[in-house]
Length: 110
Image (tube, rainbow, N blue to C red; front, side, top):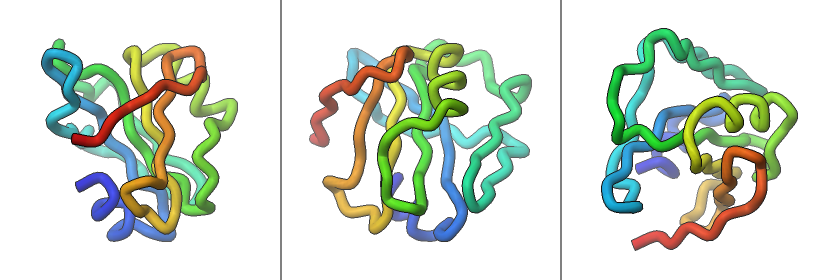
């Protein structure tokens, strides 16, 4: 679903929050008012629901680079333990997960 949403939004970024239970990400949550631009996704975090299943974020990089920017790292540090960046052309293997400090994490697609 994330890859298809990223394709639909291309050439702009796609962004959402990740919901998980028992360390399994099972859903995304789109924050009302999210702005998706050519080189950014802006989340209005005051619109984030009070939902303890939210564990982080996902967003796309239309340039295909799945490394976090300084802005990504700042957002990661304040919003949950896991963050995923997906890159163009949005195949199932075109992603990297990171912890809140920007260190790569292993995430298995099941």
